[in-house]
Image (cartoon, rainbow over all chains, first blue to last red; front, side, top):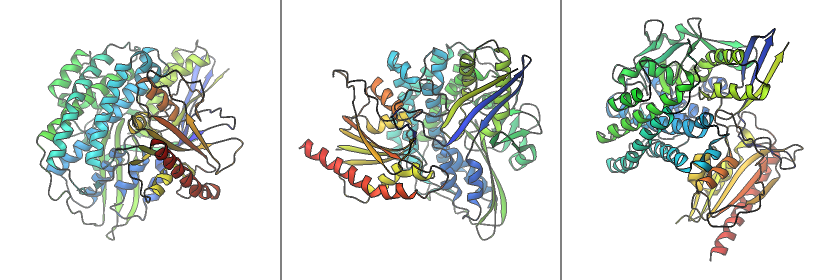
Length: 431
Length: 170
C-alpha cells in the first residue's frame, strides 16, 4: 500500500496498516504526558478467531505480522496443544525451534541493519549507509537471507509460513535439504559475529531504565519457542497458565492498542529482558562476544538493545546449525492433537518480546474465546516512560531534533505496531 | 530460467491493498513458464532478493491518491542505474516521494527497495511498476467495486507486458 498524491508527490510509500503518533504535553517546563498513540490490528483477530476451528489459529494469527509470523504460529500451537493436553517434544519441537531461529535471524538482521544502525552512524537510513558502506549492508542482507532460507525450507515460505500446524508440521524437510541449508548458515555465523563486533563500537547514550523485566524461561535452554515458566526481575517465576493473573491489559483513551501492566506495574519484554534474565543459558561463543561487547550480567540501556540483538543473532545461527547437525526428520511430522473442552496458554519469545496466546476451546473443536497479548502492547508503558524521560531531558531542543530523538527512543524497542506504521508525528504542547 | 518475476505487494486482509496478491493469484492459473510469481509484503530486503538479476520485474501495488479515481492503474517503467551505465534522469518512480527519515517500525517500501537495490547492485534488468488506486483499505478481504472491476484489466495488462517482453527477448 502506498500513499500518493495525484501529482505523484507521495507522502510515504510505506504500507498503511496503522497510524502512530506521539503527543507530548509540557507545562511549566515539566513533561505532563507522553502518549504513544497506536492503532493496532491484533485485537480484531481475537474476535475473528471466535467460532473458528481449533486447528486454524496458526494460519490465521500468522497474518497479524509479516516480520514475526512464526511467533504467532508458535504461541498459537503452544496454547492449543496445552488446551488439548498434548506436549510436543523431541524432533518436532526441535524443528519448531529451528524455524523460530530463522525468524530471529531474519527479524534481528532487518532491525539491526536496515532500521537501527543508521541511528548510531548519523545516516538518515540504510540506503544512505549502503552508499558509503556497501559491504556492511550486504553483510546484513546475507544474514537476513540466511534466516529467510530457514523460513522457506521449514515453513514453506518466508512470509506467513504455510507448513506449521497444530501438533507439528504438515511435512518435515529431508536431511539432504537441511545439509544444504547448513552450507548457507556457516558464512552467516561469521557475519553474525562480525555484526556483534560492529555494533559494539557504536556510541550509546547513557540511559538506564528501571522497568521490571519479563521473559519466558525454559530450563532446557535460552527460551525461544516456548518455556515452562515466566521469569521476572522483581519477583518469583510464575507458571505459564498464571500469565493473565499477573499481566492485565487495559484500554487507554488515546490508543487502540491495549496497555499491559505486570501486577499493576510498568514492565519490559524483549531482548533486554531475555538477556538479563536468561543470559547464562547462551552459548559460550555468544557469552564471550557479549563480554567483549561490554555487556555484563544485565543490560538495561535500551540503546544497547542492538548489541543484544546481535548476540542473539549469533546464538540463533549457532542453534540452527546445532539443530541441523542432529536432525532426523520426524515421522510422522506431527502429533495428532484431538480437540477437547479446555483452556490453553501458550508463550514464545518473538524477536521483540514475549507473545502470549490463550484459547478456550469447546469439545466440538470450536474456539470460544481467544486472547493475544503482543510484545509491543506490553512494552508501550515502558516506551512512554522512556519518552517522558527523553523529552524532559531535552526540552531545550526544537521540535525537529526532539522528534528525531523520540524516534530513536521508540526504535530501540523495534516496535511491531502493525508491522508498517507511519511514525512519527510529534505534537508538543508547550505552555 | 526465470525471465520475469511478478511481485504482488500488499495485504490481502486490507481490502484493496490486496490487489497485488490477487493479481499474483490470478496469474497462477495461467501457464507462464519462466515467470516467477511472488506475493510480497514489500519489505525491501525481500524485494531486492526477489528481483535481483531477473531480466524483467513487474511490481504491482496499491496506492491511495487524492483526489481519487479508484480502480485506475498506472504503469511506470522505472529508470534504473546499472553499474557501468550512464546515470538515468532523476525521474521519480511512482510513490518515490522522499521520506528520508522513515521512522516507522518496519515502514520501508518500494522506493526504499529500489534505492537499496541500486546501492548494493541488486536490480532487475527492467523494473515496471503497476500502481492501482485503492478506495478502501479497512479490514476485510472484499475489494471495493471499482478495484474488483479493475482486476481483469490489470491481469490482461500484465500478461501483455510479459508477452511483449518475451517477444523482445527473441
